[in-house]
Image 1 (cartoon, helix red, strand yellow):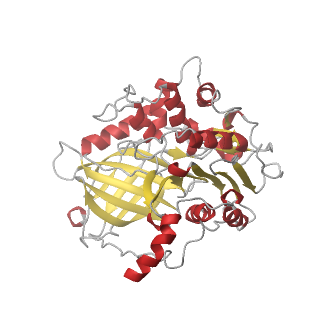
Image 2 (cartoon, rainbow, N blue to C red):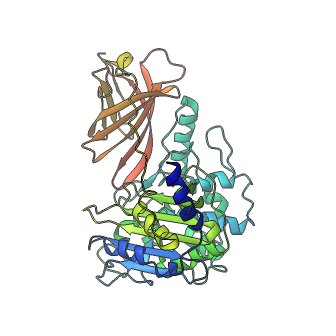
Image 3 (cartoon, rainbow, N blue to C red):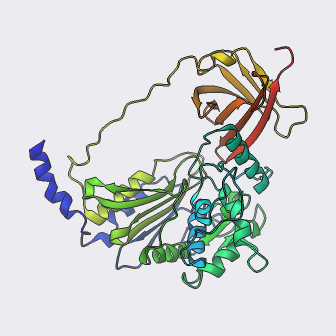
Length: 445
């Protein structure tokens, strides 16, 4: 082992210097070319000292090829665009109060734009769903705070941006595209975001990608469309100017690439089950950065996030030695108590008649699989139940196509299990939204 380390150290130490042909992006191009034909992707690569490179794959709604003039959905990158605009507007100081109260907290602008664990996940690509309001989100946050839940914090959550609207939008800049245009366009030439909802109605083909679903997205920042060239100009600007990344629960994560000599990397990505998948990777010391927007067809193709970053890093620093590529495998953690629902066995709870979101919950076994929930007519079963933060955290699903995480606890101030309070983070392939459920024990129990 000592000999192996001694051999590899010179390779790693030199790896921080970019290889001479890094800007050719040979490996990134090959990885993108390997995508299935029905996938659409925009990749922007910035290598220090060079103009940004835009690589396109797939077709627009009108059948034309995707180009640097194509409108593409910003997806979760809307959070980073808004963070940069706030950074510019406030001279980098985002410590001022946001003016809203989340549970018992009064967050700053930085806390909201960066993402808060206390704010539930919310994103929705469906055309036929009713939009949640800021009041809905704050009610969920208040319930979480009151009942001591530890809510899920998916990277695609966008609810905080709804709470930021009063601090960003006014009569002069009434929409998010206007806010970004006024704030960022003096620095990012030509930046002209579009709300997908303003495009022609469904059925009209256009030189854009995924506008049919993006025009209905909620919250509003998810409807942002930008030309691929504008995305490249913005990404190059923030890389060149070393614009800091927001600090928060949904704003990416930093680390060192030990395999490449401790190179620093910040990653901002969402390759979960959203229709629009986004990836941003920044290497601050080298002034290099990668950006990817991927729109998959219904037939899922190969994962791109880790492979694309590895390809970009290979272009920047060269191929790793086989020994360095070796990883250490992990072990599954046990589920804990095999009978977590024993105290609830035999109970059935339901929402009141006429509730906005009808729900019934029944516990027939004490095991992790012992709970079933019928939510808005969809029946799901539990696969895991663990006590967390004064509540029971229960994972539910229906044939792995839809489901969510249910946080459930006796209503504070009530006696026994007759009254229960829950927060359900419900998801499928097109949305993730939180719902507060007040439940009472069903007659006859």
